[in-house]
Length: 117
Image (cartoon, rainbow, N blue to C red; front, side):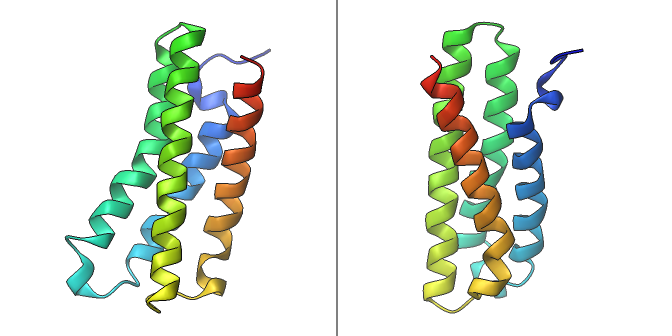
């Protein structure tokens, strides 16, 4: 049947899975991070599926690619924030394994889509 809406895009679905996972992880962070690292992580993770959806909704392929670039940038930002959480021992490699796996998939898919531009 093909793609009917942004919800049909695998990259958006993976980004939504990542958002759920990161929100779960944020509950493990210390309360003092509520308005700093945790807040930044929320913005980054929510930005990924949001920009994919917004770009798709523009109904213009150049705009879609531009918003994919923004989404990929947000994925890189989140990846860095998760690495910070590991380095300062708020989270472990095991706890973040699923998030890093989803991030890898999202970056690969966005790179593939962008290489077709």
